[in-house]
Length: 246
Image 1: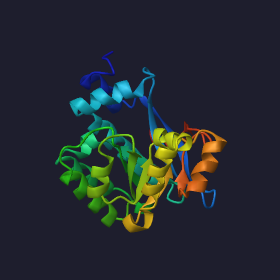
Image 2: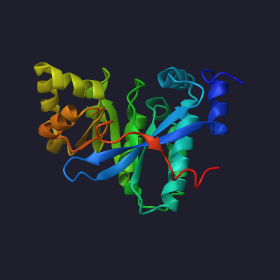
Image 3: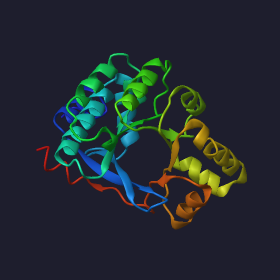
Image 4: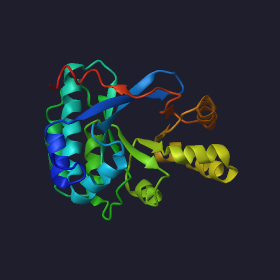
């Protein structure tokens, strides 16, 4: 069996669907109701996801996983149009390529459920040199009615650059940044300043990595719109996939 960390091995795992999908709830802090679930990928033969995804981003085969998750989410939403929405991740390494957008839009033509049910998260794990393709994709997705979220805001050096160029609906604040703000006044002041841009940027904020009751109360007090983490809800197997994908 080819290694999952090689381009060929990664592509084989994706094409043969040798991975599992978990879902974790993103909960509205105002109502306490689940707003949507984020889909999380887990490969059976490797516990270190970063060590798998990073080489796939470098080689470009992460595109295969992104499009596979998009296609599966569309199947699930079409079969369950009244269920909770789904957020799927698109890597910056995929979005960075000009030929990726046509593939995404071609997949979306199959969606029969409301586009508001399919949230697209753009991850910041890959530093995009040219933001034009990402901006064009986000604008088109929003035009079609899909909410767009920038993931891991505050985790990388590109956050401010992305905020300036990419008109998202949601900003998901990195769990490490949230924890740092809980512990230090300086980080807390920076996070409060970022949250104060809510109305000016017309965005809403998700706190990631809310693993304790203390952090849950902290993000409520700060005025976050939604939260994700073990104190909100644990990841669990996505039950709707089993009815669609063999």
